[in-house]
Image (tube, rainbow, N blue to C red):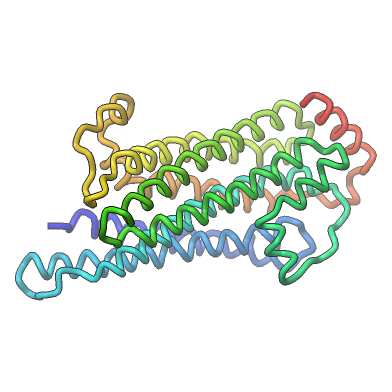
Length: 312
């Protein structure tokens, strides 16, 4: 009965295992170097890990449903498996956005003096409060400040998405009403973030002088429309979710452009997989062509940065 979803989940798991293999070589070199790009791999590892585990949980849940439907088991399916899979799916989608924003910011941060390392509560506060954005704003780096602010927005959207996913198994009108509102808010916030990241990448490509950074920015720009299509169906799911746990059948306002949103939401792994592949390609671009800081004059970048910010 649910064999097609089981097949999709197994294929997804296999795809992400292949990505792990392809990303090992650049990860090893970059992570153990002084490159500012090495923070990418902590986030990328969490992204791929969450996709693999969520796929495994979904396969286990679908197996339970199949056994129940065929009469092999009296267990209708552990809803906690589905909720855990949804939470991890929310985390992975959030990390794709976080990584996209990181890559865009990296093209500026590469030349900046190393930051003092912060640990513990300060690091947590930086995720919650736009400290870095305010610091760059005070220096007149308006574009970088905007990118850091979007990074904070992504963290807020991720938390909302996780909270909404954890409540999907709740019953009761009041609880589901809150869940619906959280889903709507997180989906809209992610849509805004995706558009802003796309605009940042496009603007930087226009002003960028380095072919190396231009290639990196193009991969980020390609990711944006894929994520935008993906989030349209999340918005569709959020706004057609009913407090009785069903979905509104009249979904014409979400289907006139792309067809049945439920189909695309179910196949959203395609968009997310392509985005993750592009992020893997980005890591290979850095692995192959990241320039040494000594090869560039900081004053040259300062002039470029000043020109770029003045055009904002």
